[in-house]
Each structure stands twice: as structure tokens, then as C-alpha cells.
Image (spheres, rainbow, N blue to C red):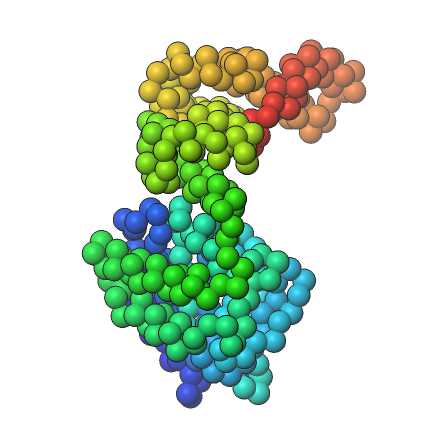
Length: 326
């Protein structure tokens, strides 16, 4: 969806937000170009995707991690997902910038290969060829469109942009760090596709390495195998569905990627020391205890109800101490 907005005289905003059916590995979420009015501000707020801003002219301020950065033409800053930020234009010389927002299973590893970091989410002027960055952002915007072909073309231009950031990175990734990149990419793929009957071969193929190589990388950084991570992640999601929905155990099994209900129950019990049905019942007991304590009842009745459920409460707390974390 394309938007063109006119603001005060001499200011403007042109933006495009992509639709659905986007590539999973890397997708442009939005892209645009804005000349801001004095003091124009976004935030405080949180994005659910990465967003790179390149300053073309003027100046402004970026607040993140309790730091305030004064930025000018040629500087570039990034917004990380789930990180609270605020940025605003200078009152005397408001900035003009171009931006691109994106997400996908490749996004984390691509950003790791640049000079951006959560601790210092900036690349200052003099390091990057600013005209090249601006031109590539313009190319992404020019390729916009609602069809899948346009989405792929925009993604291709975004990969090219990221290659520029990678080429001029001062801190190059080490060979050892490549193992971490493989794990991050595999985890992102699993986190997105766990509800489908994916296999470790599928994960390794997506990452672009052999199954044995993926196994070694997981052992190095996760202290578990890829299969264990996949199963643990599915069990975590199953626990949420058991607590928060009325779906049958069989439906939950299929919802989290288990094609065999019996295998799901066996995997669940091996990690939680109870069956899915027992887990749900004990969770309901916890909720009953909570509801009792909020009602106006005689103290003796509350103590009696709590005593009846105390054992279930303790057992569930012990089960939730399991390494399969929410």
C-alpha cells in the first residue's frame, strides 16, 4: 500500500507498506522517504521488525538504550525488533531520510555481518558510500508492488543493500562466529515453521549446510541437538495451547507439528513428567486456586480449598521448572 502525504510547506512523506505472501527468508515490510517538519517525532515505541534509516540532509536525534545520539546527513541508524526507541527531527534543521523495514529468517544473520549492534546501532558518515546507500533505498522503493514478483524484486534489492553494509563493515565475522549464524538461522526457521511437519534435514537444507555440520554448531552454542531444540520448542508451544485453549490433545499435537498423537504424548511426558491431559488438569487446578483467593469467602473455606489443591500446585511448579521454557 503506497502512501503520499503532504505536511507543512516543503515537507513530505512517501511510503509503501508490503502486503501478504512475502518471502520467508527476507522480506521488505515497508520502505519510504520523508522530509520532516521541525520536531517531527516517532515514539517512544517498539517495532516488531528491523528498520534502517539513512539521513540525507538535516539533523535529528535518536534515543535508544538510555542514550541520545545527535545525527546528521550521511549517518545511518537502525531500529531493532522489540526495542523501545524514539527519534525526532531537529527544530532548526529538520532531517530528511530514507528508510526500509524488513524481517525474515535471514535478517538476524545479515545484521550480525554489518557494523550495526544493539549496543551501538549506528554507522556514522565517512564509513559508507552515502550515495550508494541512498540509491539502493530508492531502488527498493521503485520496485514496490502488490504481487509476489515485486516482493521478490524488493527483497533482491534489499540483499544488495545489505551486501554494501557487509562490504564496508570494519568488524568482519570470524570463522567461529559462522557457527552461531547457522544456529540463529536454524532457530529462526524452526520458530517460524514448527507447526509444519519439518525435519532436521529440512532445517539443514534451509541453512545450507549438512546435517552433521548443523549438529556440531548446535552442540557448540545450544548444548543440545537440533532435534532436541525442535522438540522442545514444539512442547513449549503445546504447553501454551493446553493452558490457554480448549483444543483437544490431538488437535494441539497437529497444531505444533506432531503428525502422531501418541508420539506427541510420549515426547511431552518425557519432558514434563506428566501427560498433556494431566498438565492441563493441573493448570486448571492452579486457576481454580487463584479464583478462590479472589472471592469473598470464609478464611477456613479458602484454607480448605488451598489444601486440596496444594499438591497439584506444587507438582505443576516442579514441572514448569523443566528446561523447556516459555
